[in-house]
Image 1 (cartoon, helix red, strand yellow):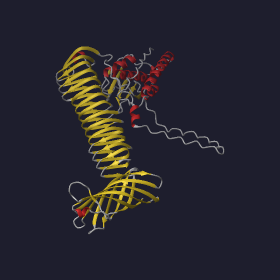
Image 2: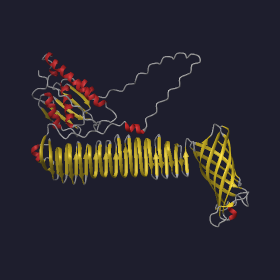
Image 3: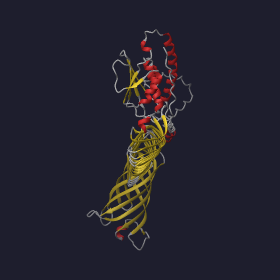
Image 4: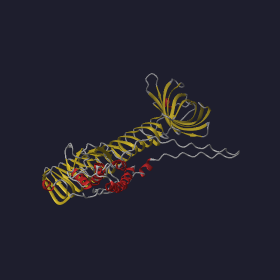
Length: 604
C-alpha cells in the first residue's frame, strides 16, 4: 500500500490578526505539530509495510474518492483550494458536495465561532472521528493544515495532531507550593534580615513597551491560483471569471455592476461592487463597495463601503470596516476596526476593538483596547488596561490606569489617574497627579483644586474658629494629605447689628510632626443681612496657622492673618475692632485692610 507524502506546514506569519499579540503558544504549537507530523509520517510508512491486509481502516481511500462538505468555514478559506490540498495529501479524488452521501467516505469541514475549524471523517463502515484545530490566517497555509489533518483522520492518527495544532487543554488546579522548611534559630544578638520589598506592579508605559510588534503584511501571491494580466466582469462570475474561474489572481481588474476574483496585485476599478476572496495588493476604486475577504495591502477608496479582513494601508469611504488589525489609516463617516490599530482612525464615529489603539480623531471615539494612546473628539470612551490622553467635551475612561483627560466633563473609572482638567472631574480611584476644575471628586488625590472638592478617602475635619472682627465660624475641612477645601457658616455678633456669615476657602497643609502641623489658607467671607439675606460686606483673608494635636481626634490652632474688606458703605467695611486703613483703590473709603488673628479648635 502506498502511503501519501505528508506536506510540511510552513510556519505561520508573524502577527497574525486573529492571534492574540500577548501570546506565542499557538505558534509554538504549530511548530510542534510539524515535528509530530514528521514522526507520524515515518510511523505511518512503517505501519503500512508491516500491517496485515485486513486492516482496511488504515488504508487510503479507494479510487472512488472522498466527498468534502464545507459547512460554514471561515470566509478566508477557498473551498476549491482546500479540496485540492486534501486531494494531494490523500492521493485520491476529492469531490465537493453540499451534503454527505450515505455509504461513501466523507470529510465535513465546519467553522467554529472562536475562529478554529472542526474536521470530521465518516468512513464507509460508519466509523466517524473528528478533531478541532487552530489554523493559520493565511488562506493557503490554512488549506495545507486542514489537508494534513484530513490525512491523519483517514489514517486515525489525529489525536496527537489535534494536540499539536491547538486543541486547548483542560484547566487544572496548580499543585500547592512545597512547604518551606522552618528557618534555623537565629543566634542571640544577630540582626534580622530586612523584609524583601514587594515587586511593584508594571506601569502602563511598561505594558505598552511589552506589546508585540505590528503584524507583518500579507504575501502578494496565492499558490495554486491562475495569474492573469487583465480580467473584467459585468457581474460576479459573469465575464472573464466565467471562463477563467474564481481561483484567479488579476493584475488589473475592471468591473461594471460587480466582479469576483481570488486576488488583485495591481489595480481594480468598478462601478458597483468589487469582491476579492483572498487578498489585495494594490488599490481598489468603486462607487459602491470594495470587499476583500482576506488581508488588504494598499488602498481601498469607495463612496460607499470598504471591507477587509486585515489592512496594511488606507481605507477612504463612507463606511470602513476591518475585521482584523489596521496598520495605516481609516478615513470616513464610520470607521470600525476589530483588531489593533497601529495608525489612525479619522471620521465622525471611530470604533476600535483590539490589543491597542494609537490615534482616534472624530466626533465620537470608542476604543476597547488594552492600550489606547490618544483620543480627540466631542465624546471619547476608552475601555481597557490603559488609556493615554483624551481631549474633548466629554471623556470617559474605564481603564485600570488613565494618563490625562481635558474636557468639560471627565470620568476616570479605574485604579489610577494622572491629570484631569475640566469643569467636572470624577476619578473613582487614586489621582496620581492633579485635578483642576469647578467640581472635583476622587477616592484619593494629592491635589484637587476647585470650588467644590470631595476626596472620599482624604482628610475630613470639623473646625470652629473665631476672628478679631467678632466673626465666629463652624465648618468642614476636606481634602488630601496636603491640600484641602474649607466650607463654613457663622455669625458676627459685634457691631450695630448681627450679620450672618458664609465662607469658602482652600489651603495647604504641612505636617511638622506627629502632633504638629501648619496650614496656609485663603478664605472668602460674605456678610449678609438677616432680614433680607442681601450681602452688605465681603472679606478676603489670608492666614497662616499652627496646629497642635492634643488628642488623636482633637487639636487647637491659631496664627496671624491679613484681611481686606469691601462694604456697601464705609461703615460696613470697618470690621476691625482696632482700626484699619483704606486699601488705596480709587477714592472709596469702603475698602479697608488690616492684620488680624485666628484662633480655633479642630475635631477628627
